Amino acid sequence: MTRKILLLPGDGIGTEVCREARKIIDWLNNNRNTGFVLDEALLGGAAYDAHGTPFPKETLEKAIKSDAILLGAVGGPKWEGLDYSARPERGLLGIRKELELFANLRPAIVFDELADASTLKREIVAGLDILIVRELTGDLYFGTPRGVETLPDGTRRGVNTLVYTSPEVQRIARVAFDLAKKRGGKLCSVDKANVLEATEMWRQEVQKIGDEEYPEIELSHMYVDNAAMQLVRNPKQFDVMVTTNVFGDILSDCAAMLTGSLGMLPSASLGAKDTGKCNALYEPVHGSAPDIAGKDIANPIATILSLVMMLRYSFSLMAEADMVETAIKSVLAKDLRTADIMQPGMKKLGCSEMGDAIMKELDSAKAAGVKVA
Image (cartoon, rainbow, N blue to C red; front, top):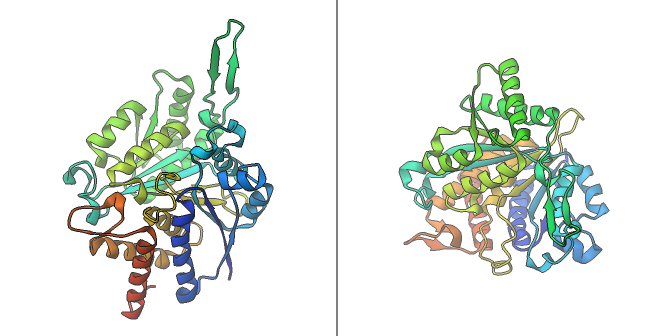
C-alpha cells in the first residue's frame, strides 16, 4: 500500500523544519513499512519567485492527487510590497479554499517536561490539553466586498466583510461536537454575539446543533474577549473550543504561548469526508520566522508533531504516531532544547540536531525491542 504525501516547505524556516520531518518519514518507511511516497511543490513566496504566483496550478494538481499535505510556512518581508493577490499568504489561503479545508484543529498540549517553559505558573499550565477548532474558509479572510478605495473627498476607506452561512457554521460545529464526544464531553463556542450579528447567528446555529444532535455534550458560549482573558487566567477550564476563522487565528496563538513556544504547536486542516476522500493539510502554527531562517536554530518539533497528527487523522497509523510522540518526549526528558524553549542548565540544540536527537530515540526504541501494536 502506498500513501502519497506532498511536501510544501514554503518560505523561511519552512524548508528547515520540513527537512527534519522528512527524516522521520524516511525512518518510518525503512523501519515500519509505511509505504509513504513523497513529492514536493512550491507555495508562497518561493512559488512567486519561481512562477509569478504564490499558488501555481501545478501545486494544486499535486495537492489534489495526494493523500495528505505537510506544509512548512509561508511569507516574509521580501514579499510585503506585492499586491495582496500575489502575497505568499494568498497561496496558503488559496489551497485551503480549493481543497475545502474548512476545519482547522489546533491542539495546545503542555508536555510535563516543558511546564516550566511557559510564561505562566506551572500549576496553571501543567497537564494542559486544549483543542481549538477553527473554521478556516469563511469570515473576514474570504468575505466580499473587500479592499481599499479612495472616496471623492480624498479619504481612503478599507473594507473587509465578515460573512458566514448556516451550513458553514453547522459543519464546523459538528466537527467540534464529534471531537468533544471523544474527549472530555465539553465544548465552548466563542463568538462576539453582543455586537456582531454574523456571530450571533453563529451562536444560534451552534446551539441548535447541540440541542438536536449532541444533547450529551456540555455546551457553553463565551465572548472572544473574555475567552482570551480566560485562556491565560484559567486555561484548564476548556476542553474543546470552536470559533470563527479570525477569532481562532488569534486565540490559537494565545494558547500556543501557554505551552512555552509557537515552535511546539502543530495543526491539521481537514475537509469533508462526503466525497470519499478527506483532503488534509498539516502545518506548524508558527510562521516563516525570517529573522532566524537559514541559521539552523528553528524548532522542528511543531512540524514533526504535525506529522504525528497526519499519521493519526489521515492514515490511522496510531502506533507509529505514538512512537514519534514518545521519541519527542524522551528528547525533552533528557533536557535537550532548541533556543525557543531553552532553560538554564539544559543543552541547546539546533534545528537539524533536534531532528537527529528524535531519530536517535526512535532507533533506541527499535534496538530495545519496544513492542508497538
